[in-house]
Length: 117
Image (cartoon, rainbow, N blue to C red; front, top):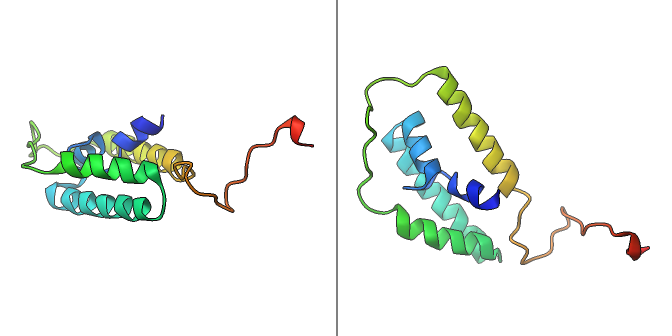
């Protein structure tokens, strides 16, 4: 689930980048791609190995000329906007509480085991 959510980040040629390009156009998708790479880099510098590794991966594979969509003229329907929003929420809810397991957080406590009493 985490790897699928990482693939849904709006960054370059990842699936999330293609979804962002279809929903918002090339200019907004390029801005979202840059912002996502920047946030992944900041997350990597603060200690998250997951952000660092995926940020490097996404940065190297997002470059180059973007492949245009098959049909960029016909507007997409409301149902596709809805699915894009659902996927963005799933991506956010999956990745937000995951710090990569490299640093402690007061927001997330350790799991409770019955043997710890």
